[in-house]
Amino acid sequence: MPERTVFFVSDGTGITAETFGNSILAQFPARPRHVRRPFIDSVAKASAVVLEINEVALREGKRPIVFITLVNEEVRDIVTGPGCAGMVLDMFRAFVEPLEIEFGVKSNHRIGRFSDASQSEEYHDRIEAINFSLAHDDGQSSRNLDVADVILVGVSRSGKTPTSLYLAMQHGIKAANYPLIPEDFDRGRMPVPLAPHKRKCFGLTIDPVRLAQIRHERRPASKYASLENCRYEVNEAEAMMRREGIAWLSSTHKSIEEIATTILRDIRPDRLIY
Image: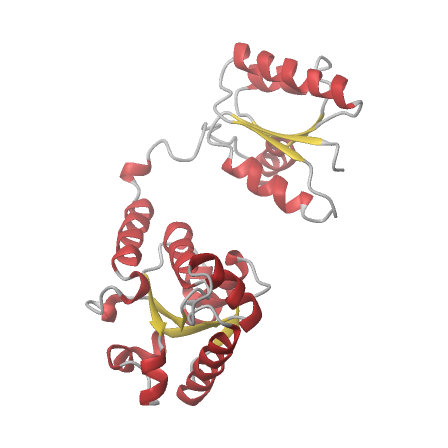
């Protein structure tokens, strides 16, 4: 596996091919070399990709794995034909064609999924959510929290910012995030701006040792990054969440995708249906 190369070939952005391909590859222990080839929308481009695939096969002595999402049949036939030395996994033939039979209609064979994004309400909602999350990152603003879908709370560097941006970009969720600081623990209660919106709050915590490592990269040899201080902040934050009845999870061993899905399930289950 470490010596294998995987190609993601698409006539659009390649996001679908790469997302699906990586989901499959995650079932195997090693990480192969990845090659992205988006916007392969002509016979000439397809032929060039096949040459590249064949060169890799010759150099490595093993056929590359090739995930493709190609709509144009002429282009697709170049990559799936006998002239290609890769193991080609065609997502459209695997999924779209059986669905055409099941539905009794032909698919629209539309290249890409963002060509009319400017006309999409969902796209507009995502842009609005991203702007909201950026404006409410790290407690920068407590205005308009009443329109937030979720408010992430936790100590500094526990994963709030990447999670809030992922929720905005992928799901159109207006996610604010608010850091819990030592002054909050001294007061023994939730920060005042959050109190009216407690039902929207979701907590992130993290292993203190891992937190100290992350903070040390940002501010080495500081009290902020010391293991003792990290243990104190994490313990106090978790105690506050328990006391206030706020659902929370540890980001230590979870991906952003797992965290976001858990938040959607607990805070906005309606967003799991679309």
